[in-house]
Length: 256
Image (cartoon, rainbow, N blue to C red; front, side, top):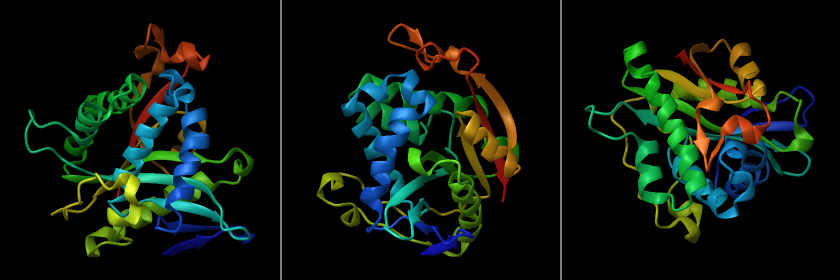
C-alpha cells in the first residue's frame, strides 16, 4: 500500500511488503546497526551475529503489519524504514513484556540482549499505558535511513505516516504479512494472533538528536529523559563507546 510521494517525486512511502522486506532488513543492517547510538553503545556495530538477532526482531515485528519503508522511485531501492510494533498492556505486574521475553528467549549474543533489555528497561520506567489510560499502542521501534539519503526528511515522513496508520488499524489490518511471506530463514517465528484491541497512542524511544528532532516536529510529548551513561555493556558505558557523554534518550508519545 502506497501512502505518500515526496513533492519532488523521488521517494514514496509504502507499507512493508514481501517485495520490500529484504531491502528493509538491509537498511537496518547497514544503517541502524552501524550508526544508531545504542547499537554503538552495546557493540552491535562490531558484532554481525548480534545484528542478525536484531533482524529477527524486525522480522517478528513485521508480522504486525504496521511497518513502513521509503522507496526510491527511480530504482525501487528501499532507502529508509521504520519497523513498528503493536504493544499491548500486560495483564499483570508479573507478566513480562514483549521485549523482555525476546531478550531472554531468543538472544544468544550479549550485545543484542543488552540493546533489547535497554528498550525494556526504559519502557518500564515510564508506563505510558497508565499515563494515557490505554491498553494498546503502536511503537516506532527501529527507524533508519541509508547514509546517502539522509537530510531529506524521510524519517519524519515515515513517523508521520506511522501515526496515520495507527489511527486506521481499528478498522482492520492495513498490510498483513504472514510468516510464509518472510521466507524460510524466519519460518520459526510464531504466527501472529489477532489482537482484541487497537492502538490509542503512538510511542517511541528517541535515541539521537535526529530522531528527537523528528519527535519534536511531530509534537510528541517527552515523558522521560534518560542519559545513556546509565547503561553499561562489557565494562563501558554506552556513552563512552558512542564518544558523547551527554548522549541521552527520550521516551515520548502522542495520543491518536
